[in-house]
Length: 165
Image (tube, rainbow, N blue to C red):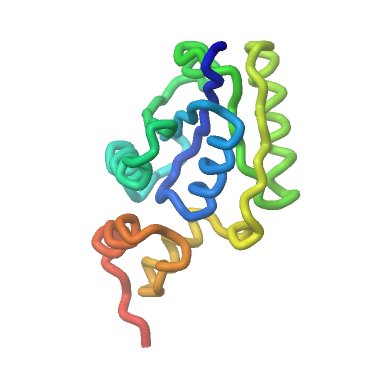
């Protein structure tokens, strides 16, 4: 029996409890999930790719079914190279679907052997995204409910938050 491998791509700037929930759900469906940190030329991340990889590795250090990598090429090329059969995408709201659906169809057109699996995080995290977390941290708010302690610590250090009144 072959190992079922899926790739979960994203910027993860930073990784949140919502991302972690999708990864956990992915490990319920696949033997291995590769969390792929994207170097996206259209975004200016707060954390370097290496910092994002380090945070994710720290969080999943005790889960041998989760690995982390970084890539800046075509996703389908990475998926094929890793012998994965699926791409995992998280859907928080209906507004995410149109873009994700277009990407799934494009990826399928480039390689028809790759499936896209849409996973919905726990409802506690449907509103959550990295942009919101970065802004809360920048303004001196508490992000403890949104990210693990190791991420919170790095966020606070990185953004040097404004003091709240």
